[in-house]
Image (cartoon, rainbow, N blue to C red; front, side, top):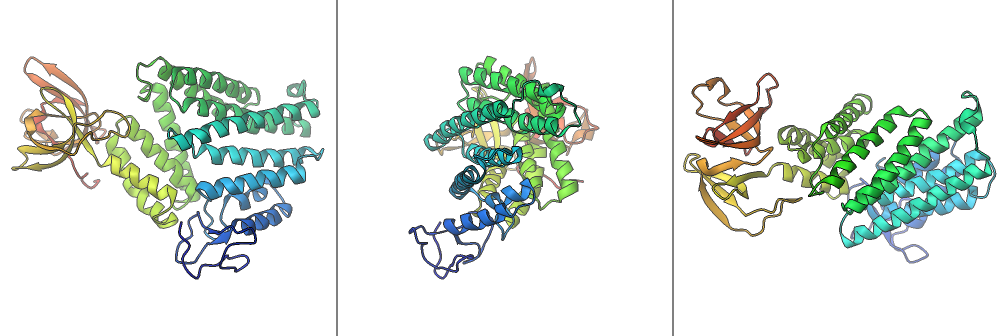
Length: 446
C-alpha cells in the first residue's frame, strides 16, 4: 500500500525506510493516515523481545501474529514475512536446546508459518506457488516431529501413565502438531480438485484421524472423518468442483454453526474468533444453496467486519465479495433452461430483465453483458434463489411467504418448483413458476 506523507514507525519514529532500505508497512486493522505503520525490522525486534520474556506459549507466539495496536492478525505478505522471521528466531534460540518445551516453541513457530501460508493458497499461479511451498514446509515440519520422537525415545509412550508429565508432553506433540501436519498436507492436496489430489488428501486425513483417536481427541477425529467422506465423494464425482451435498456436509455445517454460536457467546460479536467462523458458515450455506440464511448472516456480519478491520482489509474484501454473491439471483430460462442472472422486474412483474448466459461454475461468471426481457412464466428460479409465493388459490395461506427454490419437476401440466420455506413450520411444496416472485431484497425478519 502507499505510505502517506508524515507516517512514521510507531517503534523507532522514523518516517523513511529502515537501515536496510525497507519501507514502512501496515497490513492489519489499523486505520487512519498514519496509525499502525512500522518497519518490518522494528516489528521483528519487538516480537523477539516479547517472546523472550513470554511466560507461556500463547504470549510466545502472539507478537508475531497480532498487531499490538489494533489487536488483530497481520495479513498478506506482512504475515508471511513475520512468520518467516518467527521461525528463524525460534530455531536460532530454541532449535538446538534439549528441553522438551523448547522443541514445542520451535514447532509453534513452524505451525504458525504453515497456517499463514495456507491462507494464501488457491488456484491462481501465485497461489499455486504458495500451495507447493506450504506442502514442502509441512513435510519438513513432520520430519522435525519424527526426529523429536526419536530424540526423546517415544516408543511405547501411549502405555505410560496418563497422569505423567511425559505422557502429556507426547500426547501434545502428536495431537497438536503431528496430526495437524497431516491435516495440512491433506488440505493442500485437495486444492487442485483432481481425483489424484483427493486420493492423496484422503490418505493424509486418515493418518490425522488415527492420531486424534490415539490421543483421545474425539471431536478432531470426527472432523477428519467428515473430511474423508467428503473427499471420497468429490473423488468419485464427475464434477469435483461441486461440493458434496451429503449428510456429512450437513454435519460439517452444524459444526461451523456451533463454533460460531459458541464463540459469539464467549468472545462477543466483535471478536475475529466469532467473525471468521461466522463468515465461513455463511459461505458453506451458500455452497449448498441455503441462500436466505447465508445472506441474512452475512448482512449482519459484514458491517461489523468493516468496522473492526476497515474497508481495505483482506477480511473485509472477502466478506464484501461473499455478500455480493449472495445477493445475486439466478434463473433458468425456458425452453432451453440456460442459466441467467436476474436483475429486476418490469411491467408490474410480468417481465424480468436477465443478463447472461451464465457459466455454472464458481463464481458463476456472466459470459457477456447482454440483457434480455423475459416473461416471468418462462423463468425457473435456480436452486437456492429466494422467492415469494403469489397468486395461490388452493394454498392461499402461502401467499407472501419467503422460501428458496429447490428442484424442478416437469409434470403433464407444466413445470413445478419445490420450495422450502424460511418458516420451519411450513412444509415444502411444488409450485408453478408463475406463482413465484424472485425476492431481489429479503424482507425483514419477523
